[in-house]
Length: 148
Image 1 (tube, helix red, strand yellow):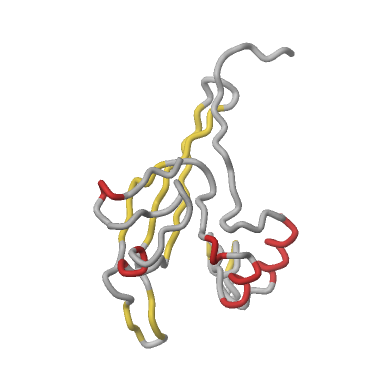
Image 2 (tube, helix red, strand yellow):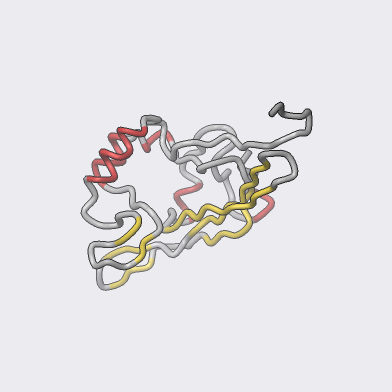
């Protein structure tokens, strides 16, 4: 069956850090003590992955974190300060990003990615990394670059 000339859209997908080896990510994720995906050590749903400790250094996180795919920020919260609870400092900051995929033509899928426990506001003023995939100086909606 031949494909027709109708347009499709497949976003650019990316690993969150510069390291782009599937095997390397699986090795690092399997070393986590907590924050495992899909379930916690207590058997509860945990639909995400924690990036922590030495793992961040090995994955080259100092070069910035990238969104899973091209998209747009649809909701966010940036804490003025970290929350100090009984277990230590905590962030309720997040970014919710909407993504689109159209393949085959006229079969459009919308999906979302959620980035939780993000840095406090002051940390976004320290250094701007990269050209498109990072929060720019400032935190008002008009100061946030689209993730493209």
